[in-house]
Amino acid sequence: MKRRTFLKDAAFLTAAAAAMPSCIVRDNGAPSADSLRTAGDFRFRNDGTFTLLQFTDTHYIAGDPRSQRALACVKEAIQAVKPDLVIHTGDIVFGRPDIESAQEILQPLAESGIPWAVALGNHDSQFGSSREEMFRAIRELPGCVNHPPKDGVYGCSNDVITLSGARGVERVFYLFDSMDAVVLKGEEEVHCYDYIRHSQIGWYRSYSEHFTVENEGCPVPSLAFFHIPLPELPEALAKGIGPMAGNNGEPPCPSRLNSGLFAQFRELGDVQAVVTGHDHDCDYVLPYGGIHFVYGRFSGGDTIYNHLGPDGYIPSDGPTAPGTVSGCRLFQFREGESGFRTWVRLVGGETQQALSLPCK
Image 1 (spheres, one colour):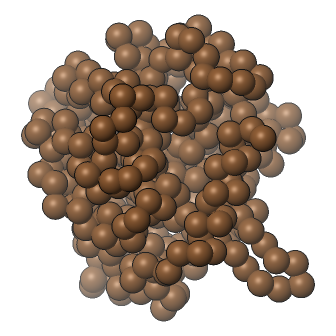
Image 2 (tube, helix red, strand yellow; image 1 turned 45 degrees about the horizontal axis):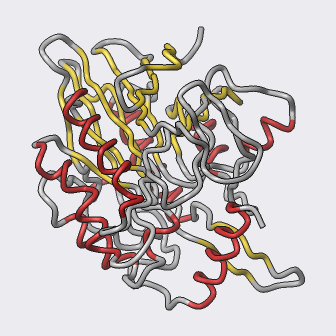
């Protein structure tokens, strides 16, 4: 059995057996415009730039020596890059003690003085603590800008962060909680990864439309961050659309259920890139339907499968490849410009995939 298959089966069993956390709510519609709040409004540096660093899939286990590579990756990237904001797109932990593990791998962020946020992954509520308990413990760490779960919005880690210049909000970062797994009864019993729900889409629409109105009717360029990729990504690959850059080492593992978030991004016209993790052997950028699918670079150690080598070597199966290099993805924005730059940084400082997006 391949590791991904095992992980998927484990996720479904966990979802079926676990009690529903209190932060999981039924869809009650979108928040009103007068209740819109952001988790932070940031400003460009004096040189007109703003750098965002993404970690993903650290899969940390406190006390497990296999996790040391993940901790070293986080520490080195923070010290070397000194970004303006960090977003971790989930699967922060991968074992017990789960809250202690999260606190330990996120401690370098807490000590750095750099603001940071998380979008929880499917494994972050599978090792004893509820999703709400895990999220509350994370938010108590210094520097975390995540807000508490929103009333009427499914999940925990749904947040909005803005980046403003002299003319107002120039960039919006949406964080969605893509949850764990779901089992739906019916003619066909569906077991799959969870999906972005109706209330989350309504929540996003409220902010997107608000920012568009404030920007004199023009959508504000935005990026969406969450853990599990959208169903449109394998659709793009099936049509023969390949990555612009990066490693494509395994098929995407999205939900089997499509709630229409990609269509909402297209309709509202603001989201330029969907940034995820989840599939450890992928770190590529792929354009589809006017939006770029962007994988973060695997930031973990050896508690979980990972095959990305320094030269892009990916074995077809088997144990972790010698020479696997963890890393992170970086995004840089410049005041007054609608596009952005992105690249991958490996432990040790090597950079790959330098791209300017969206492509003209």
